[in-house]
Length: 247
Image 1 (tube, helix red, strand yellow):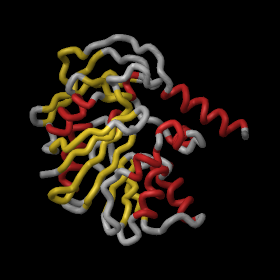
Image 2 (image 1 turned 90 degrees about the horizontal axis):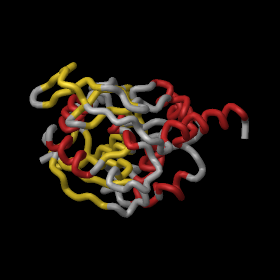
Image 3 (image 1 turned 90 degrees about the vertical axis):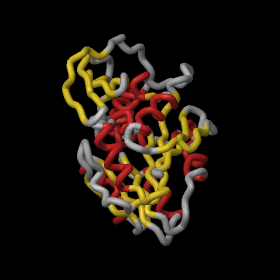
Image 4 (image 1 turned 30 degrees about the vertical axis):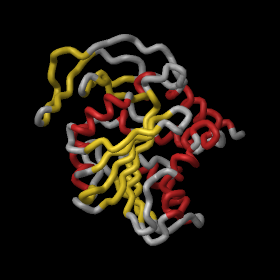
């Protein structure tokens, strides 16, 4: 393995493997508010931003230098990403938004399964989108469109998407309420959002607490932006497979 690649993987591993977080709680200082949703400032824990939403501390974003972690050879075996993709409710002409697409690990595989549809690869880091574009240039599927989002808007047109997929990224959103509203708006009526997050209820999952979410917390946050919970499945070894729907 080349030293640079090895270093990237070590950095990414350190960013995700479990350590004991420093206990903290949000203060009463409101730093931002939208409608009934309030962000609060508190003491930052390990890997945390010190910004809280509905009692949950928002974690720092994994940078593009950790892209190798997303493409690690053992990922399919560890996370059963094959089962994740097999269980997505896909039609061959769907428009799918992979939000927090990163290096395109899921984007390109989904694109192959919807030959008459399209995948919108959304990320706030142009460097990540450049990786996807380079992979397309090297012969990957063509029905992928990259979209540069912002911290509070995925930049998707209203009523334009059949399915949104978010894998291990929602907990890093700096503005989850604003993003949630924008994502819900982009879904067509009846459109679905599949949220994949490491199970906070399972202490055996070897991921830092800030990189996990409980089903209860996810339901609360999705309900706040008008999305209905449909079901939660736990066929994945470490993650919740949570499905929400726009009424």
